[in-house]
Length: 87
Ligand code: FES
Image 1 (cartoon, rainbow, N blue to C red):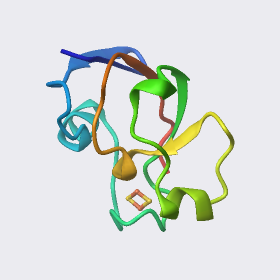
Image 2 (cartoon, rainbow, N blue to C red; image 1 turned 135 degrees about the horizontal axis):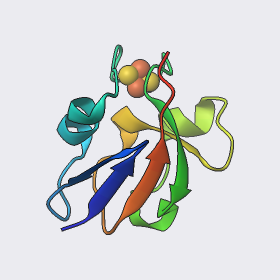
Image 3 (tube, helix red, strand yellow; image 1 turned 180 degrees about the vertical axis):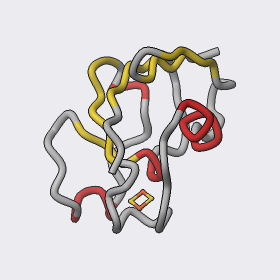
């Protein structure tokens, strides 16, 4: 099962499953859930290749190369390490 290191916390999510619930349990906040508000913006320190490709919404949002929107991450293929500061 892919592991998520989220700030100083760890969790696992079943391979291919959506990570939203796990992100939320670890402290991520969501608002629009449509890739518009940026509430769920996170920095991916490791494992970007283990997340689905950036969505159209993410490509339109001002994100650095190492940033993603948690609400747009639909499946994990492997371990990731992220930093989330919140809104
Ligand atoms: S919850 Fe609004 S961009 Fe993710």
